[in-house]
Length: 478
Image 1 (cartoon, rainbow, N blue to C red):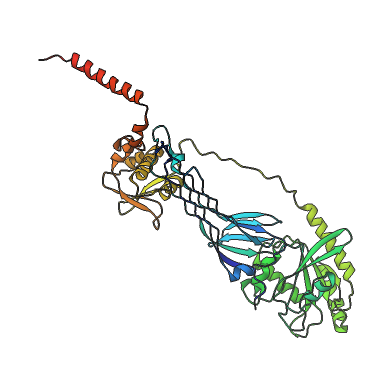
Image 2: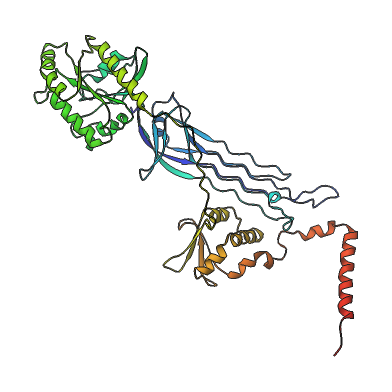
């Protein structure tokens, strides 16, 4: 049964925004008290957050589909809809978030570090928020925007200071078990270790973590054995330790050739050339192992390696190797640049940047792309003529109409707003630029005329009669 997973594909869906409410306040003796529709609630986000208590991505392997809750619609009486609840997904320290193309979206290191994998949709405005001096009683509200749908890949790269690398059965698990309190499975057959093991080592004043990376054999960087699956766990380590078996029973292997093979695999994987390395000759408690260690040690030291002879079984040489690793880790930590305070970079848009594009496609269709126009389309109820007119006004003010004319659009040409798989297509008529004028005083409710004071209505009527009388007096017959 699978108990450790370090790579999964996750399908996340943020919550949809709630729709705005179109409502008119009514009470006794005041049947049309004005718009009072509330705004819809925001949809919940899907957030990945580092949790130190989580060590594997196993939960997401079994349940890869996750969805946040939707926002609630607004209601009359200026009552806003409830916001959707954010879905917080705990991930192990060292998780890398990638898109399906392999581009890194976030590198989550450190407890509490978070990344919004899917943004919740905005709630639609109610007609109370849409009211203005020109649009006193809107008979429509905006729809909530749909939440993001994302497919992301999560890869776990173990966060450790020291990585033990070597052939299967070289004694890496035994070594980590005696250097730390880790209790990995230990047996006398290859590929006993199927998952990386982590342990904490204390050497004087230095406390560091050590990882046992399993499965490295010739061809590991190309996918042979288990190496390709776990080589990523070496990337974050500051020090590499070659654990070489001096008591192997295979006649075609020896510590020097084993070292050359593993170094070649690390080179093929890439990005590890700058890590300090030391060599551990393990199993010197075996007589032949001690003799072989004495034989190959001068050759390894001539290559520039620091060499330690140890026995995990007999607990020989453990103190020296633990302090040597602690010293290297301390140096690596001191050499790292101090983390700078978070900076906010503001990149203002150019003054002449429209925020959308208009392109003519091969079939003659004009396509409009941009965050604002596409968002406005998603918020529009196309069953409501007033809402469609409001959209026309917004697009006109943004400059879509002018840009279409400059691009050569003519009356009756097809215009699509949005991507190919989810666009609103309509036949363009230049006259929609005068949307407000075409519909008269759109948004004004003529039923409210009856609520104006009688004295005001009499003054307006008298002014109209006076103007008509002046026109009659000025009239000269032929």
